[in-house]
Amino acid sequence: MGAVRRFRRVIGATASNGALARVTIAYFLFVVKLNAAWIAVLVYAFHHGGATASGVVATILLLPGVVVGPLVATVADRRSPAALVVAAYGLQALALGGIAIAIWSGAPPYAVYALALAEQTIDVAVPPAHYAALPAVARGAAELTSANVAAGWGETAGLLVGAMVASILLGLDALGALFAIGACLVAAGVMLVRPVKVRGIAASDDSSGTHRLRSLAEGLRIATAQRRVRTLLGLIAAQYAVVGALDVLLVVVAIRELDRGQAWVGYLNTAYGLGALTVGVATAWLVSQRTGRVVGSVVALTAAAFAFIALFPAAGLALLFVAVLGATRALLLLVARARLQVSCPPVALGRVFGVAEGLAYLAMAVGAAAVPALIHAVGIRGALLAVGALLLLAALTGSATLRRFDEVKAIPVTEVALLRSLPHFTDVPAPALESLALALQRVDVPPGVAIVRQGDRGDKFYAVADGEVQVTVDGKPRSVLRRGQGFGEIALLRDQQRTATVSAVGPVTVYALAAEPFLAALTGHSPTRRRVDALASSLLTRDVKRILP
Image (cartoon, rainbow, N blue to C red; front, side):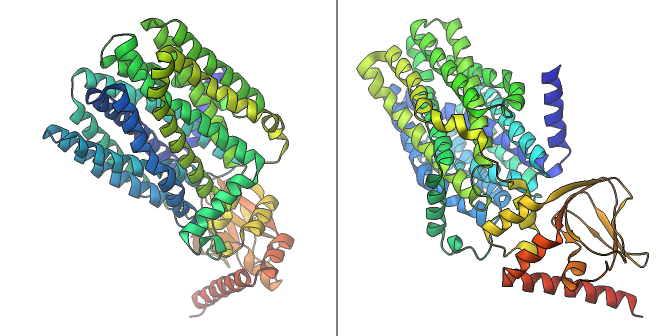
């Protein structure tokens, strides 16, 4: 019953936030496309050159993401992660449609590989932008946790559905249709995410944004400066090296070791996705557990599963232990990403996730490239054992940091994203913004209740996180404020009584910032003081014009 309650709580929190639901559903469709198209490319390569061709093609397709991912992810910090996602989905739809046409028309393999290279390179922009967008649309830390869990479930369910689609169409020898379906899925993602409007968290005057390469260098510096971030990135890279190797190994095991044909590549990948989906509900609980304990258990299970596949290469057992590998992958990546999200400075969130994605692509390329050499040197079973030991080694290397991980306070990333969405704090430098975020206090207001009253003494500024508030002056409605807007600055700046009453239209969540940190931030940063003064003056002028005949 506890698992069911956790599932309902996560789904309910995600569904209640329209923007969050849109980006999560679109990300699920993206993962379905990602897994189905990737399986199809590897099978296509295997039929045109065996295991070596699969490994080489996988490596070539993955390597551009090493550079492109971190570079493109700077847009997520500087501009809008949602806009970046929309652009990536649209370009992928075009590339996948081109692959389908190339296969149907009997084009040579290099044409298919060229289009696949373009599509795969675009793929790398999506995960960092998605995970950078979540804090900007979540209404608090609890909802951000639910969003991360829902994204993890979307990935696991997407792996399963993508593998099932690939199994069916590979069994029908319909590779072209497989890519065409992928194009339709990401096109749907464009329609879902396009209405979502969020801003990048980085301030417009951050020196790291003067040039994209400098911004990338700053993200790299942040990623390597903190031991916690380095350890998490190392775990993510090691896991993706295992994923890259396993992608090729599943093709080889299905066709050569088990002698079951290409449809079994899809079946093994379906088992992989099913294993991830089976443990999905548990991830909502695991995210709240101690990091070291979770990682240690997951890594041990991964190594054991690889060993059993190597030692007992029967079809039924292979399905079972591949499912275990899918489960451990889902658990480890969810925990690592959720911890990474609250461990790095919010101003560099997109860039650090871009670095993570670049490392993931590099690790996948290395893992895929290593498989043919490992098979040649120690055989298929030896290769399985070697890959299983890799993640165990990475976890042992970072074990000391993992044990102390939960002792450090998490960064209030959702609060930072909320403040950055307000025009009042557009120019506030990142360190000051984080300090302000730590001073925020969440207030949930029932419908119809006044948050501030005209004539009262002002002692707080308020940022609207969710819902709508009605502003009235002398009993007359003046405006409605929503997320990304704030109120209360006039009384604080002018040291006077409240000029309006602000009441909750429906259930409303606001964050209150006391006068002292609010005024200290303005005093310490002249551009912000000028911006807020101008905003307050415009509001007063507007109200005066409405009152005068």
